[in-house]
View 1: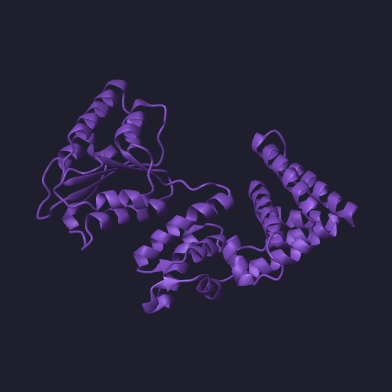
View 2: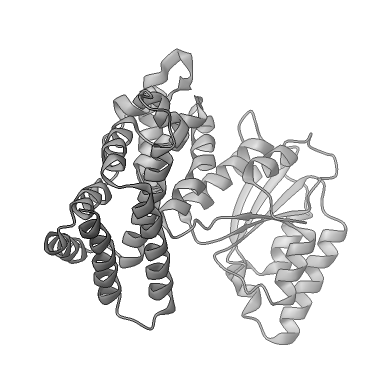
Length: 353
């Protein structure tokens, strides 16, 4: 079966107990511990909307219990409950077996998938699997996979965090407007550990209305997103190369990752182009919803967009793309790549001045 969103999997699992399940097995694949825990809770809630009996939810390690023992548990009727959920952790242990044992384990899983227990939801957990193995191919064909890996770049993490915020909100008993979820993700760079307490705070603030808006996010969430990138934009617009080098040096000494800096700058340049395309005089709150940014960030972007002509922004995006490629190639020193990038961006600024 193809990879599915957690929401779709929860819908499938919410079918009445006792019927043959629409999916034989769910695989939680990836290393993000927060997303894993959130998915576990979503699965249990979908299977037991009125609350799960303690004995109907089992967690066990495949490394310690072994596959045959866990499949036997899956085929045993649950005690005093219409269904059960078994979380079989450390699926990677099966790939570490000797070839004969590994083949036997795969055949056992295939046999279970052909005739799954209708009262059991089997959840296999793996931090990482080799997609080339026969086991991975079997799971891709017979199981439903929930990916737990977020993208590494800031922009990708921010986009990935938006549907997760919706699930957090649902668990907290509130609904986030799409603009509010996007704004919260943008404000906190998609960092789920920082987002979770803010969702709880916003849910408490929403109270009986049970709805969180972009205005609520702007009022309550601290300006935790670093404005470093906008400060750098101001320096680049002025063409002050020495000042830009000093600023870059301070960022690197503070532990900023070169690839993350380039990604953030590319995101900023794209947003500046989007700002320039907005109708003149648009209200910051309206612009924030359209751009999926905080209103105060929009104000900064509007100011910077007036200082950086579109042609320079387009050239800057090309330079940033080249810098990103150089960093990913691993053939050049990251600092040298960044210094060359700053030279290119300030040269354009100086020429314009």
